[in-house]
Amino acid sequence: LNLLVDFSDAHGEGTVDDRLGEFFPQTTKWFERSSYGRIDYRPETPVKRWLRMPKPFSAYGIERGAPFEPGYRKLVRDLVKI
Image (cartoon, rainbow, N blue to C red; front, top):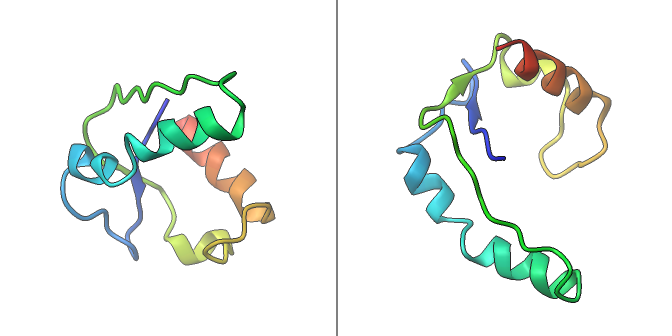
């Protein structure tokens, strides 16, 4: 499941399909290689628009490229509420 989000201080650019096109099929191939063929990641994008998060990106305290920041938990909680 892929949900694309943006923020009041970091707007999504282009269409959702254009943005996903930057990642697929390369991401599918990466999962297949890194899992030795056990993962067949098929991107599903049921929402074809950017989902605006209720807080600005800066409010989550996430540093770009830091995958285990506590702010990610806050972001996911807010995303589930949308």
